[in-house]
Length: 445
Image (cartoon, rainbow, N blue to C red; front, top):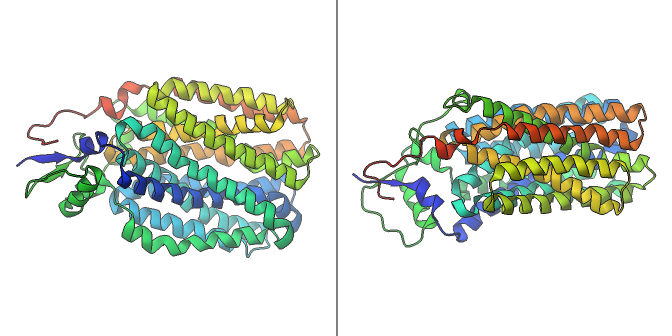
């Protein structure tokens, strides 16, 4: 009996309204995810004042969510291969919505940190799942761009946090922007019912009825014969993978390098997103003006992500990513030295830190085969959280010892150089297209 190669069907499809639906779901979830993470950075000066904590303690408070993200990325990324991405993403939304809102009810740094840790589990788990989901469904010729556009939802969420923070924190208190994070929990029934399930999960469960419906939406007008079943392109991709598979097939060293690259990128990203407002306030800018820099940073991140995705679809993604990491060091040094126009420089920092990290996730999603795609992106993101965890604490220490502004940004810029080196050592020959994408006899597509 002929088997339909649904991976190839997805790869070769023309972009249509079904892909818009997938993009909208993933984009929307990342808006919520980005808001829940960035809200702490936007409110940090007010939280420090309200709870009477110093910069070093505030750094530990900000890092509590990042500790949770490290575990959430690995655990929920791998769990989705077994329970499906809809259920995994519903768990993520439940965790980051409820416990971010709960943090708004606390007045003690320890309780605040505990709530943020639990919220971080959901925040960290959402990123690898939606990245893998979009990469799985996106047509090959638009994949880099679509994943990058989707990841811009994360930056939009950060923009929303900065915008609401600017409007409401001074008038209603920092708690108000945390309470708003609880609203998205009402979306969970819709995610479970309306969001298309992972192709890999459906093939592993041999759910041919759902696969037939999805195949008809991926390629309208497709005629399937009665009784046809479905397969994925990679040998063994219809099986549930594990973390151990990330280190097989020649992928081990590259898996480590993905983790290092993510750690470098996330250090820069969270050093800036957590401390930019405070650093600019220390430089003499008002709270409203300092929040404008956070807006410029996230706008730059959106431009960098979309531009990087466009370049990645037209050139090789690896050199594009290397150059982007290197440029992040340049823009950070410019920011530290007060090069004008300052808002444009901050936007450049956003493009080459936040935008670069989005592109790194895109590369990881393309690198790993379908059976371990969520696991691979989750592992890179989880290991990378080491950089994210260290960043708020390290910069908090630098702020507390009152280093000159240029030295703070010089320290952060070193991580851009290290990220470029890590990406350079990734062996693209061990990627998904090089392993297991063979012709299968009797396949119909």
